[in-house]
Image 1 (tube, rainbow, N blue to C red):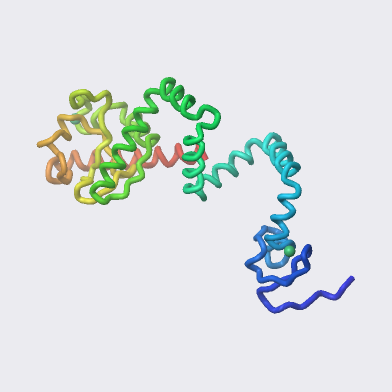
Image 2: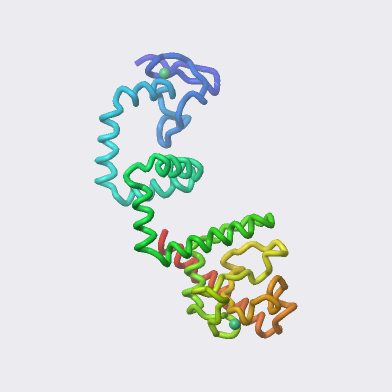
Length: 237
Ligand SMILES: [Zn+2]
Ligand SMILES: [Zn+2]
């Protein structure tokens, strides 16, 4: 066995091309080598990948088939880590209409009209918030949850009187958006038109409109709402 070569800190020799390179030229891999890096430099890895592209693709396909759960966990992590890549990819797929992307979307919309409307509502909420400089990230799924958690009823009066032309009660801000409060699970209420219409609560703080007992009751319900949502998220994860 050759004596171990002593290199200055932050450098190592690639086992393939035999060149000395800085650690930045090596990909990180858990449980590999003392410094947690692969023994081949990035360049050599790329060459190896391109020379064996077909086999690697086949191997990865098999691996996905044999490990469906690990595979979907991996996909989920990747999506969370690289949202911009996913967006670009989706955009490209859409533009090229690979696999009838548009047709499938259309079919999905027809088969899931309620989900589609919820998505539209979520996007409209985000747009409205962005317009006044508030960054909101309240999803369609969260909207659906708030509705069903409160039985599609107004949290104040228990009624479900909607604005003209509306099919569902809107998800409202408990602390007003106009004062910079974003919609989150702990600020989302379901209110009917009689309790949150123009001239009722509107853009005002709850304390300016409702009595203390009502506020206490609603805020308690909202805490339960947050708890239930967290539980649901844990179950899904
Ligand atoms: Zn190399
Ligand atoms: Zn009401």
